[in-house]
Image (tube, rainbow, N blue to C red):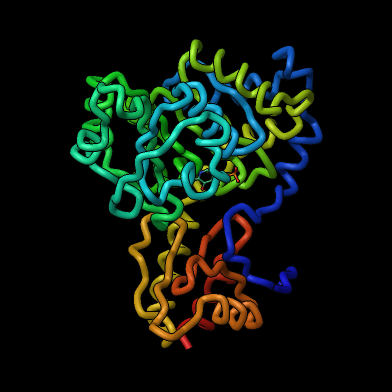
Amino acid sequence: MKVDKFTIDLRSDTVTRPTTEMREVMHQAVTGDDVFAEDPEINELQRKCAQFFGMEAGLFCPSGTMTNQIAISVHTRPGDEVICDKLSHIYHYEGGGVARLSGASVKLLNGDRGRFTSEDVVKAINPSDSHYANTSLVSLEDTCNKGGGSIWDEEEILAIHKVAKSNSLSMHLDGARLWNTIVARGIHHNTAALKQYGSNFDSISLCLSKGMGCPVGSVLIGTEAFIAKAHRARKVFGGGMRQAGIVAAAGSYALDHHLDRLEEDHLHAKMLSEASLKNNHVASVSKVETNICILELVPGIDSADLAKQWGELGIACFPFSPTSIRFVTHLDVSRSQIEMACSLLSK
Ligand SMILES: *Cc1c(COP(=O)(O)O)cnc(C)c1O
């Protein structure tokens, strides 16, 4: 597909390029060797992310896959079982890393757009009988990417937390898209609410290269003791970096300047959803909760063919399944581009 500067690129929020201001901050970054924990920008970003959700410490890593897989490897032993939803990124999109890197298996739950209940977790915990794998971890994803950017109900998270704690299970959150959740829920400036949210989990993985618009980077947060183990795992996984403050600086900049604007992405996704409903190839549109909009196509329409057709009109999108298309809004699509896409789609 031809993607040029005229294309309205709705394939993913990972396509954003660092802004001029962000590049300037990266240019000015003071760096050090992070393997010796001497990079001031990395130390600052780790502290900022941890503090944001009331956690003790953070660890800067190259990707969200790495932060998730490090967390899983710290929370489990080979042969253990991880409870997660069938749509979860850790299961679907991380190359089988749970098995390959941690020697663990997964018990998949059949949730609602990636969200399951505390009763589902109760039923999924194996008995402490040597025939069964030892259940040691529950992993949630908020928002759930494959669920179409769906947001969890915090009451349910708390109920799952209680089940997990009474069964000695760890709780991990794949919060690659957590920024979208907190902005959609309007709690992103509420320190107490953010701390309360964070207290449900033993670890949270946060991505900076999606809605936040950074070129690279994820941060894993948790207790001091957890992060010390994660640090060792990061070395083993080959994720130790040196003067990476040059990219961490972009992360701190994004936390200060790109969080509030996610509201705009959410509005843009709603606009696309309304326009798509008028398109005669579209049967239905998933409920838009954040910056992702999934279109179910009318029977007989092939998503790859339609994506190609729309691509030629200047709208780049992602065939999500043979019968569905995904739009993701982000920093690099403007209101006028969204209006343009809406008018093309509603024809
Ligand atoms: C993007 C994403 C990740 C991490 O993906 P990377 O490509 O490794 O950065 C993890 N979980 C979710 C839900 C994501 O959307």
